[in-house]
View 1 (cartoon, rainbow, N blue to C red):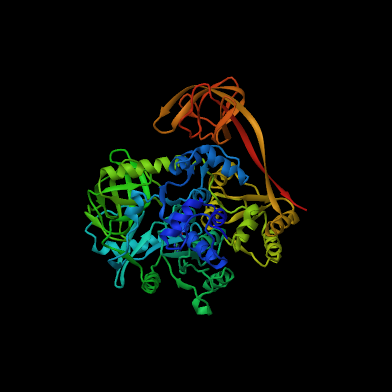
View 2 (cartoon, rainbow, N blue to C red):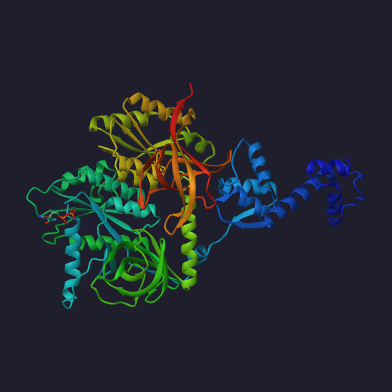
Length: 635
Ligand code: GDP
């Protein structure tokens, strides 16, 4: 085989190949030299290795997602080249399309580049090797049905453990408190309710080590207890069951234990694995047993934190005080949080002006698992947001700016959660082995029937797992649980409030409600076999013409428009036309009439439209569409 033939096969220039072979000490003179088959194979192997190494070494740092245009600049190519590459793969995109990491990397590979996510300042601060690991107090959350005694238990513990050594100090509610028992310290989170608990987890904050499920001994397990159990299980935290109100004459501990067994929480004294404690928040009986039990679990878990690194905390409560500004209660997770440190938290930043403990006393530092309320942030963050110390004001500003940019970009990309139609693809790609379902039905009997029918569906590759089931409307707690557990929600003859529907849409959670049981079963079956395909129907809603462009500090670039046809709806799909060309595809992220945010603006009215695109110009035209996903079953 001649060298030029080999070069062609390898897709490189023949002169270049000759040079490379000379460098590698192969005895070749020029592109007409010939080599035997074995040598050709060795050369091929060597060259492929070199090419791979060249690509691996050619690291280009970018921020994902990256637009086609920005990627072209980074690769030193024309956007049109990239677009035509994409077109060859059947992807008809425009230059402002946000490419995800996978797609961008595959394009870059063709141009011999290795894309890496640029480590942000934030990543550098947060990724630290753990060095000085020391034991920390366990963080405990109580959950359960309303009125079963969560607050009473917390209050009893707090009073009995703090009051005796308190010098008349007034307890402050700062979302959490810590108590000392002979075996160490325990931090209790004020009962946030399982919804907030899961919302915090959705923000990435697993701020609970142990969950206490409180069940009243006279009422037993109620619907909210079941929700709490399922939310706790989904979090993976160990569960201790506190059977409360045993002082009541009609208390029936055995009944509760029997019910627990039905929910996979078989009590230890019944041969199971779940620790249970009988107690009364009224008389105080059993409270010490509960504390002991928590300490025992904590000991086994060996909970540790790095006391030396720069501090990271999680927000448990935040509010605005008229006189003092934002008051933010946090629980320190790593490092020691010190007064006067510069911090970033959610979309806000500031320098800590003061810190107080749960007795209102000033503290200058807080170690892991210790709750403090602090002053100094320039806004009110959300529970579950992370707060972390940065070296100086400049770094804080940079990180917050970058986060704001990212949020703006994220608005344009719907979150990727499990969809029934995608199941088969994910299974084939080895990304999914389970279909997690949250099941809601109108009455108990049908709930059991639907679950039974679903679990009977046979599939070799996929296991169907009912994450939670309940009677009644699909609610926001279901959506949050679906978000953290990547489940889909299936309802049978149930309703859903419009606010829940909107929440599910924002979070990209699939909710399917059926009226006929076999349709439900058929769809799940079809999805397991890869026979469900979505079809998107786009309906034109309206057209607006840009008259002027202005920048608002909060909402970014807003186009002052006149609605020429139909109506404009917030969250609708938007195409921005300049002349006959679509130069941006996005969503109506903000819609205003004068200063007010509105949902809809009708024909012949003026409005302000934001589509998350900076370079909008007067005379551009915005067409908006609604998108409806229709599922087709292939038969
Ligand atoms: P939460 O909604 O779970 O926080 O429940 P609470 O702590 O507010 O308690 C609800 C009601 O049950 C209150 O009236 C409490 O006084 C009462 N309660 C709580 N624990 C006990 C208990 O152990 N024994 C009795 N008899 N009543 C209790």
